[in-house]
Length: 349
Image (tube, rainbow, N blue to C red; front, side, top):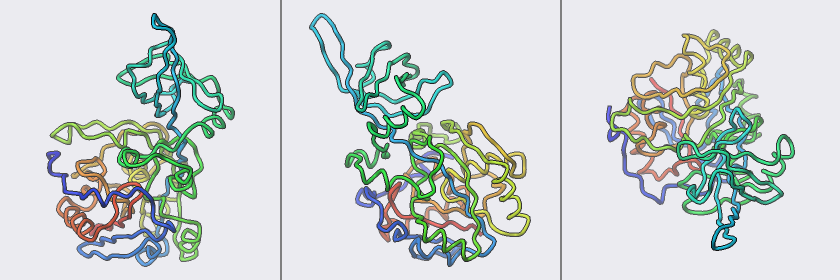
């Protein structure tokens, strides 16, 4: 199973840099067995049945991108350098793991000053990253980060434009609750309250789980044999209530449909024992063709990068050749791709 097997040509014009408005106006490509139907997210109820359960990731994206200054006193006097920081995850010692650019301009022991009174000491530089200890904690840290930070847009959007205030709304789901993600569960961005209420009124059930999406979701696969790839671990939780709801729906004949690959990866992690169970911890589950799905019946997801682990995941669900056909149709029909792009509803045979 080679990396080249998951490649396809994607015109750059199809990479979305802003979402559809309203959220539910995004296009929806429904692939049900051998059939394909062009629709919109607002139409999704046509393919759902009473008793089906949508699984939603309620993680909340933090404004994890910071820009600050480092001052250094040397033989040439006082010099300053602009330092760009993307927070990745809190460490057990209270510091944060972060990507820093340019890392070579920040030494261990130096301090980066940000806006809103926020500053951080570099305490370590492991594995090409930085460990930063901030001067604030708890609610004070959250408030300063909210004032000083920007939404951590994916690299393929950030390369085309800077994040702005609109992204604080656009890059957050309407049901976001538990702060900790540095990337959004993007399939969920298509839902608004009226659509959720409409689906609930039609007998569709909902379960909330939490997976704090990390920047590792954007890391490229660098090995030719994809089975040798190792995923970045992300923290997640399937509560007792969530596991019980999923188990009940399956017992009653309803379908389990995660919204987004993050929700899918989490519930499949929690079901590795054979059946869904409460679970909490870090998951690095890697789903590629040949994977045995234990609880997932269908998936709503956006369109993914060529040669990415997420493309491998949907290939595992639908079949490699079927995904090739679906993506060829999406490109030909000019669906918008990636985080702010359009969606697909994938229903295997």
